[in-house]
Length: 255
Image (cartoon, rainbow, N blue to C red; front, side, top):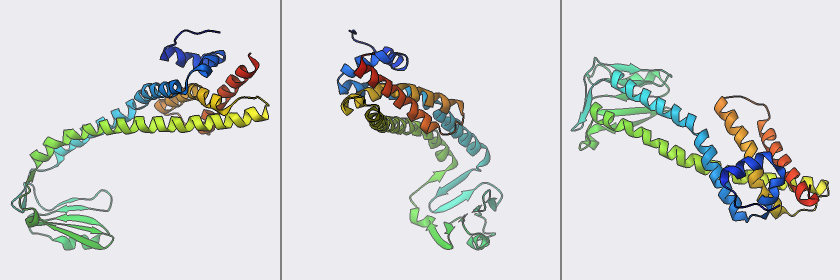
């Protein structure tokens, strides 16, 4: 059977619906397989990252709004911290408090009540962790200025972390798919040996790029839907190996 040049989406559909089409994949150079996997990664990776990116962006917005509402006006300048709010301020949600007092009513000894925490006075910051105290004197950073407004100005840049999430997400997705092709082709080689199908590992590896399509699509759907499927990893590889074995049999028997 002779095929003209086939586009990515046609290859994607055929890899899931037409085992006989694997004869076409078998004849392609291995570079085509890597290119197909890259395009598949970009497509499915983009879809699978929608929810994490949305959730992260939502959290950033919450942080910004909470900062604007809850954090009092403050300024760290010339080695002194001024806070425009009744002192002391004690924030303790997890047993590791943040204590702020620029009025001098209390000092870092307040941390003796806790295993860990942070105390901030007018002139220094003391952190207690595992019984050890670390102190930063604001006079040592006299040239550094910080205020509520300056922090608020930079908070929106947290959204740019989305860019790193995308880049790392695509890299992880592609590397994991490459690993999966090795698993599929190796497992299929063992099964073909048991079934007495005479086919080279290089052929199986070449076709494994495409046999990975359906399980990858299912995995994205499961992830986006939030469903929990027991032993899904076995199902994932089971589908891929089944496709690859049927494709190998079609190559050897011509059926």
